[in-house]
Amino acid sequence: MGPVARELRQAAARGLYLGAEHVLAVSNDRVPLDEATLQASGTASVDEPSLTGMVSYDTPYAVPQHERLDYRHAPGREAKYLETSLNAEREAVLALVAAQLRRALR
Image (cartoon, rainbow, N blue to C red; front, side, top):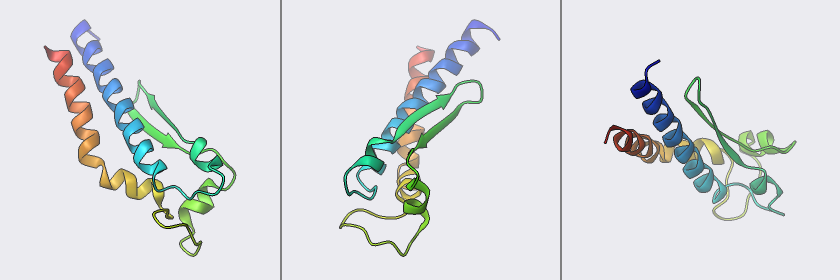
């Protein structure tokens, strides 16, 4: 891989990380909240070789809280907190990646 391709790949990874951080922030506003343990367990990361951005929550109950539509949540908090955040912020994530790529091409 040449230097230009390497720089573009790094820029794309930076953009993906910024996008994942953005989705995490939006998701944290929707995540079910009791003692904030679930919210505090959220992380954003990027696998640069595959250019895959990830957002995850690391508690034993993260998946049930996400998937169980019959759980009751405080106003503004919801099941599918990560999925709805990603879907709602898709364009913003794309814009963050594009901005990093444009910056690398200057």
